[in-house]
Length: 256
Image 1 (cartoon, rainbow, N blue to C red):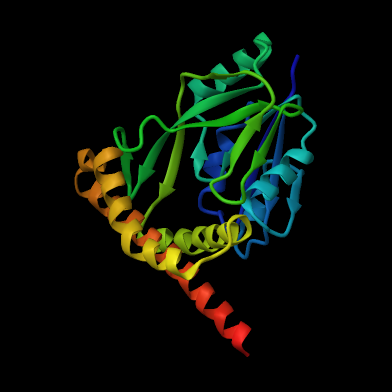
Image 2 (cartoon, one colour; image 1 turned 45 degrees about the horizontal axis):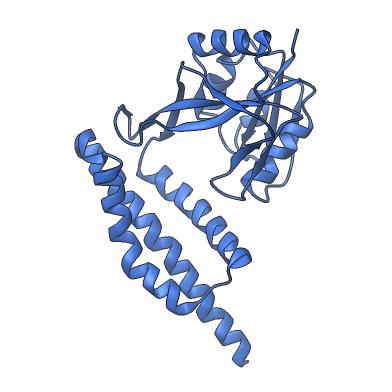
């Protein structure tokens, strides 16, 4: 029978990790990789598994691939600490991998909760490959990482619950981390150009607001959808502002 390993990367998730791990008790193995938490995340995780590792965070893909490297299972279920597997999804995962369908991986549809509200229309469907054969999949891209599978993929019906952003303070913390990684990724891939960054500061925030509020149907989620869309626009402004300031600093260094 195929062995299923659950991999979770964490940092200061003491308030969320217990609910996450409770949902994956059906798995054969749990791998938890902590990036140096200052709260009780590690001690809580050790109540569920002895396979808890401390690894310095470089980026999301590297951290998740490290977790996968520590797993011994044939199949990997990679979830975040703010995601929950309910019974229906657990049963579907187990029956799917036991059936040996020939797929290299499977997309799960996330149902997102933001600011305390379940979002049934905003950004739906939200499919991500989270279940894959260990020898057929790996995470790529430092931020907004995703799984590349070497082989055909399929879709599971039961949703994965994603308790994303609970409030404004958490939104700001995530924005700080994600935009820092995005700027670094842009620097390595394309280089940073002051003119392009300045244009991004002006054009990208309103475009992102319209994208989230209209195209991604944020307007159908009422006031919460408006707040989310404004927040997305702010993140764009923060990202391109950081790009521009990086260009200014580099120009100053070159002059000195």
